[in-house]
Image (cartoon, rainbow, N blue to C red; front, top):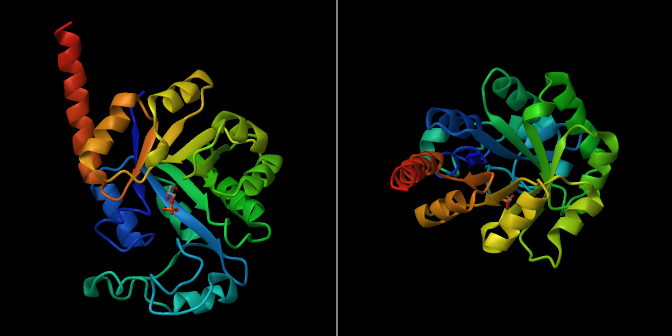
Length: 253
Ligand code: G3P
């Protein structure tokens, strides 16, 4: 099976992350999946934003958990990136799921609850996934293993990935303990041995954030199940190159 290319926070190398322009651009550039981050507003609306505060990616200030959805909607989430994106809004999970539903993308929703552990985030996200019937092509991920455990207790039919940037002695055991059935690992953790262990246990291994062509090629050569990249067009181009290299190799055998 070939490596699925996920646009990381949308096409975030070229557009303001986690906004509709970034998602639409990911589609234009041929990405196969979209990764995005979920946090919860004061009035419990799941919204797509990477940081716990709006400070870096909008013209506002404060924690997402302290702002209502209506307050968030007043903010500009595009100007910080480039003037031409002025007027871009923060996207709600509902808006995103409704946009992506008729499209072919694989979906990765990262629950951003390793710093602020939002009560009920798992149930709120699950309810929306069920409403849109998108469980089958969605993987839920989190750095918070307790959240993965909670999600697993609510749903046995959803793919759950533990995220890690830290080397673990026995990653497969950590996954089993929290009920995850996929591993989303920082590129620094990628080794042939890890790939073999994941393969052996039928655990999809997806790698973030892969922006350099040499790293993309290494992921393809090792057979990673997915990569998260800010530059989906470049990743697709390199994937095509890898495919041709494989065909030539086969033909010469
Ligand atoms: O979900 C993969 C990757 O996005 C995890 O790191 O910091 O970009 O959320 P971060």
